[in-house]
Image (tube, rainbow, N blue to C red; front, side, top):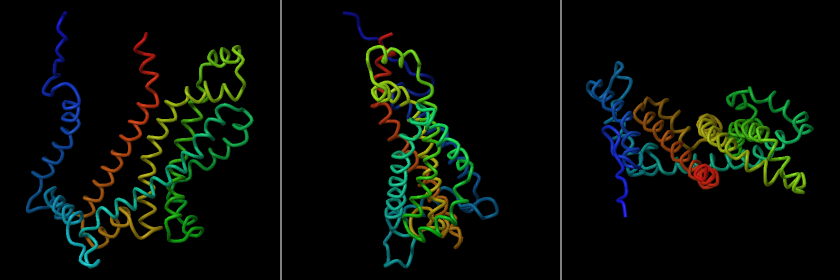
Length: 280
């Protein structure tokens, strides 16, 4: 029985997941190292920006320090603020998916729905999230629902546009084949159009999730008084740039983790495409 071929490494990194992780960490490591070396006395840019070691120390206190009965808002409150923002993103993003995916598929599938709904969506889509802030505060006040509305609005547009594109781009031969086999219009929509549109839908979900994290930060700066966005603005106001940068990196990390979750679900949902490609 012939021996299995050995997997060769590429360049400086080993093959497999370990090599991929090392390659992904290389650029951030170089940026942080250059940032640290450029600092003098723990800061750079005229003392405005702290070096990474100061940012790390600030994050450790923010995450693990004693809360002190609320006297220091940047001690021991990191997890609670992450949970506040994550819950708002989850609620707004689920709402955006629940409306955006069916609306996009129907716009792409039906000319009547497209002519009725799509012009309104394209009219509202260029309005930035920040322009909706006064409306959100006037309608919902300073509370979570205002932030959830802005998050859902931000995530809705990329989801509905990509779902529309996916439904419109289905191979017409597949639809004709299904109709020749006796499939009803609803069966064609459910068994042909929707599965074929899934790759475009997942692309919209990933883009929408990134915009949702942007929207939660914008909304928490104004519309609520908790979460990573609120801490970001409050820390800037009192001159705690170490906490500001730690907050920015926390937002990036949460966005990366949530994106990886979407990618994992996508790989599971579209495993039939990999099997189809492997069989060719």
